[in-house]
Structures are given as structure tokens and as C-alpha cells.
Length: 226
Image (cartoon, rainbow, N blue to C red; front, side, top):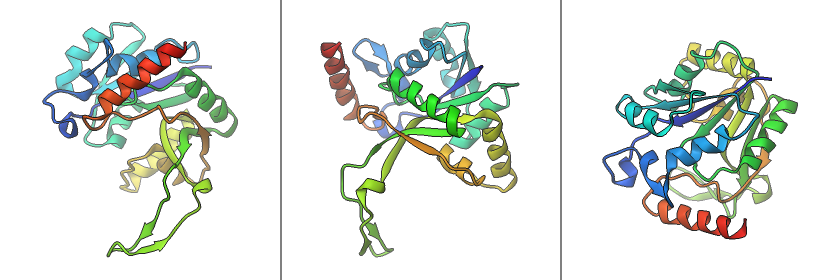
């Protein structure tokens, strides 16, 4: 079996209020980028890693990640476009493992659990049950419904798919002029079911300034319990 991990690192630091990639921010001595990639590079189930990044970050990222099993692809204008650029470089593989580079605290157990499920169902994504009560609202912000929390899962990454299935879904989306922001949705549009695998609340996405001290705290907590 040959599996390829695609790590999406082409975002900017706009919402962080910084003038560099948020993937270069430090979490207890390692960058967000290094932590995200190492979670996959240390797994025997992952044979190759493709890091999708901005052209302006290519030199810096490649210096941080000198591993010969890691290749770099320049990102597109959208998430789907970035993944398409990566897919076009893959000749053949069994499963494609898609992960947000801004999720540096993903555990290897979450990756393995999601891969195990994907091998059964062909499509799986890690996520967590929502903690808050969710309300449906209309265009005037009037509450019109309250879905049952036991049926609500906040999807994270990795999201893992049978490669031929994913490539077929991507081709269909491009031909239909669709641009999906979520890979599960892209595969769902092919008429396939995607399995949710319950993971960790600590698998946070680095998005705003407050996420960095939170990530440091989670990392400290994990090291104390090791």
C-alpha cells in the first residue's frame, strides 16, 4: 500500500496580524509547519509527503523540511486549487491524506484511526462532537431551528480518501465549475458517504493570535502526561 499525505500550507498570516506565514510561528521550540509535517513523516503508513505552499515561502519551508521524502508544490488561488496542483503530481497511490498545515497538534493516533476507517469506507475524516448548542437562523438572524447536538460533528483534518475516488470527485467538481472549501463535501458531491472518526478537541487550527498560547498550553499538558 502506498499513501501520500498532502499538507496544505499555502495560507497567509492575515488573520494573525503578521506579515509572514503563520506556519512559521513557534510553538515551544518548533514551528507550526514542522509539527504538522512531523506527525506524518514519522508514520510508516505514510510513504510520501507533499507540502503545498506559497511561492514566497518555498525556500524557507524547504530549509525547515530537508527530508528527501518531502516534495513541494505551489498552491492555487483556493483550497481546491491547491489540492488539485498536488494531485496532478501524483502518478499513483492508494490513499490521499489531506491535512491542514495549521493543525500542528494532530496526533498520530488520530491519523491512524482515520486511515483505518478510510480503508473500510474509502472516505473518512476526523472530527469532534460540537459542545455548544447550535441554532439555525434566517437572513434576519431569527432562530428557526435547533439541531440535536448528538448529530453534529465539527470536522477537522486529516481527511482521507481512496485516491481514485478523490481524483474522480475533483475532476467532476472542476468540470461543473464547483469550488469546494471542504474535501468531504467534494467527495459527497460524487454521491459517496464519508465516515466521521471522533478525534481530539486539542486538534485546533491556528487561525487567530489567541491560538498560539493555547497550542503551547496543550503541548505542555501533553508532555507532562507522557
